[in-house]
Every structure is written in structure tokens, then in C-alpha cells.
Image (tube, rainbow, N blue to C red; front, top):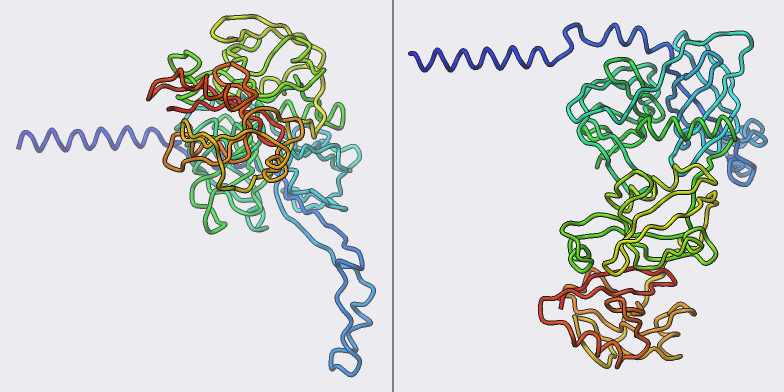
Length: 461
């Protein structure tokens, strides 16, 4: 009996602790305070004759009489989403995909009024947009941004928005994860289990202080409805982008003129690191800031300004967030030696050379030498045409890759080996000479020209 009493006491204590973890009075007070600043957004796109009008019904058809009704009326495509007001003048933040291509954008306030807006600016890269409500001499309810960096996994959060066009709705949950990457250039999403559905896009994610710590943007779902995995752009990114859109009508991101790649465990070993960290420079744009600063392909960036660089995504965000024209100090490792370089950040314009699309090359059963799971051959005019090799590529051609080797997921037929272990190779004999110095199980660092873009891969023999 004594053990049973102890067991029951533990259950009661655990239940009390769990109850204390829930907000004692629910979220009603927060909803009353915050909901008036959350708006529903409708975006209408008028389609032209060639893409929007209904076809004429044929002569003699029972529906022929409807041609006069539909013949000259352009169709209107609508999208629905959410947004929130951030100042008394009626500045609204939402997702770019909610208003993209919209000719007419309106917001519906919590009190039921529908008002027109003008577009201040939008940023497709982060999927953010800023609108201005057109209404004279009115002070709107608004909400403030909070510090998303202080949000911890397990913290309570709530979302208010317009799911399925139903109007203002509140859902609650907790932060599930931080720093999620779903394939975007500057992704750093907050993941939560708050129910987010179609129409919630662009709405705010609040902490329990009532501050906006994110903009609800994506869900992960096999069905298209909420399954408890939602992604929100953190306010640390939103505030910066929104500020630039309001001030300039566009974003002004920093640019160094280089491409970087992540350092995995194999690359870390070949670079002499105890664990993966940093961003490995895979391409330098001629005459760019990185080139002017003396950075080289193969340099490992370990520290950017006052920040230790964890990975390539962090480095890309740090550069993008740097004020244009500012000088930054970078600590790098070059062939095992520490160096410091100083670069002046310029403004990014889209479609830089490092963003080129890589075209896959067809596999061909031909080769001269097989080492490290790679079938290698001399690069000649015929093989350039056959594998669609970039015209500037010089080195040793990879003709085939052993699917059971370590190289299988790292190299491709059509890649051109330009360096091995920081040693330039121009002929097959040079490549064989360098690779012969590695024992079974050792890792060699390859620089590959892939469609005009340089990548580094560490491949185990």
C-alpha cells in the first residue's frame, strides 16, 4: 500500500505540473487584444480575353443565349490569405504569395469593413509583402514585433488568421523546432504544431506576451490540410525585410560574389577539422568583392565579423543581412593555415553567375582509369560535346561513377576534376599520380567543375 500511495502521489504531482504548464485562463484575453489587428486579405487578378473569358456556346445550342452574359466579361481569379497591421497608419504585413499577381488587393478588418490597399513592396525570396490601407485620418489597431531569437522549443504560441476564408480564427500550440530549412535561400523557419491551413498564410504567430515572432507561411502535409507541422518566418528576418520594403520599396541585400557549400563529416576530415563547421568557398565571381579581398576557391570561412559560422546557410544569411558598403572581417582556413581577409559588401542583384542552373549530363560507357569509384578520361572535343561540358572547364573528365562507392552521391558523369587535394590536375596522368598517394580508407578532397559551377567533394578511397 505504501508503494501505491507513493505512486498515486507522483501521478498527482505530475498532473499538477502539467496543469501549471498550460495558460491558466486560456487565450481569450490575448485574442481580444490581438485579433483587431489581424486582417483578412483578398487579392483579385483580372484575366485577359485569351486566358480568362468563357468560350462562346455554339450556335443552336440550348446555352447560346448565355453568350451575351459571358462574352465580354473577364474572369477574376481570387486568392485569400491573412495579414496583420504593424502601425496606426495601417501598414500591413503578409506573404508575397497571397498578393502576387493581384491587380486589386483588399483587406477586411475584424469589424467587418473592407478597405482597398496599395502595394508598398514585396520580396519573393523571403515570401513577404507590405501593403498600405487606403483610409484617411484613422488610427488602426496594431501589433508589435517580438524577438524570435528568444523563442524556445516548447514555448506556447498562437496563430490568428483566416483559414479556408472562414474569417478570424485562433489556434494554439508550441514551438516544435527552430532553424528549419525547406529549400529556400535564406530559410530559418520556426516550426510549430499550431494548426495552419489554407488562408492562414501571411498571418501572425504570437508568443504569450502578444508579440509577433513569426509570419505563418508554409505547412508540411500529404493532404494539403494541417497535420501539425507548420513553418513561420521568424520576426528577426521579417522586421529587416519589412523595414527595407517600407524605406526603399525593395530589399537591399549584401553580396560578396562567391558560392559556398556545407561541410559534411567527410569534408571536415579532409580539411583537418574535428567536427563539421564553416562554409567552404566553391566559386569566386571575377571582379566581385570576394575576389578583390583575395578569397580563393577552397577557402573555409570559419568566422564572419563577430559570428562563428556554423554552416553555409548561416553564412549566406549573414552576408545578405550585412549593410551594403560595409567592410567585414572574415577568418578563414586556407590549406590548413589560418588567415584573415577584409571584404567590402556590395548590393545583391538577382541572377548572379553562381545561381546558374546545372544541366545533367548523360552517362556513357567509356573510360580510361578507375580510382576512388570514378571512371576518368581525358577531356577532348568529342567528350565535351557528349557530356555537355562547360566551355571553360579544364581538367579530367568523370565518365562514370560506381554506384556502390563513396563517390556515388558526390560525383556525376560529366563532372570535370580540376583539383585533387589542392593540386591542379589537367591530364589523366596527373590525376592518377595524385590519387596514388592515398591509402585505402583515406579521404581525398576533389574540386569539380559541374556545369560551370565549382563544388568540393571529399571522396573516400
